[in-house]
Each structure stands twice: as C-alpha cells, then as structure tokens.
Length: 127
Image (cartoon, rainbow, N blue to C red):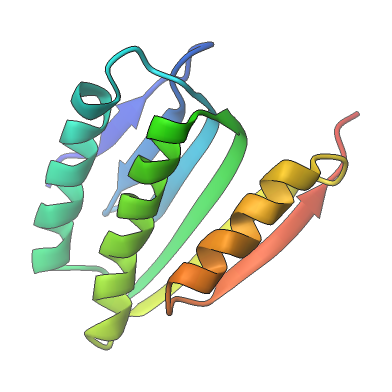
C-alpha cells in the first residue's frame, strides 16, 4: 500500500498516511478551493487501509485553521478511524492545539464527543 505524503500549503494541510512507518498525521491549515477533490484520495487510502489495518493506529491532528467544509472532512476522517475502533482495532487520536487557540481546543473536544475512539487533547506553546 502506497503512502500518501502531501506537502502543506497556505490553503491545504500537510497529510502523511504511511501504513508501513505507522505515521498518520494531518496538520496545518485547511481551506482548499475544492474540498471534495482534495480529500478524495485520502478517503480512498483510508478505505484501503481499513481492509488490513495496523495493530495500532495513532492518528495525530495539529490543525492551525480549517473552514466549515474542511471540518466535515475532518469528521469523516475521524469517523473512518472510529469504524476501525468499533471493529476492535487499537486506535487513538491525538489532537494537538496551540495553548492560546481556544477554538482548536474546542474543536478537538467536540470531535471527541462525536466518536468512540479515545482522543487525547495536547496543548503546545508556539515560540
């Protein structure tokens, strides 16, 4: 299974989905012009991954900003991992946020309330 490695831009997040290296990370800003086309390959990858997941899937989000359309896509990604978790797989979500960014902290809390997967909220300081 090929890894996905998308470099982030000012409008799109950095996305690394690498089954072999056990890296599942999405970070940065997400406000792509066409949200469906940007996220389509990510959903395809996740569907393939679900057929033969790793023993442990630790998924890290470190979002600086996302628009409403992207928030729905983030939820769909979380939901894919929630389905794995509910099938008995070991899944954990780490939601990192700038300690001064209450909106991102609240977003993490809200997502945590919507899924069964354990979500660890982790604040960090920007130097």
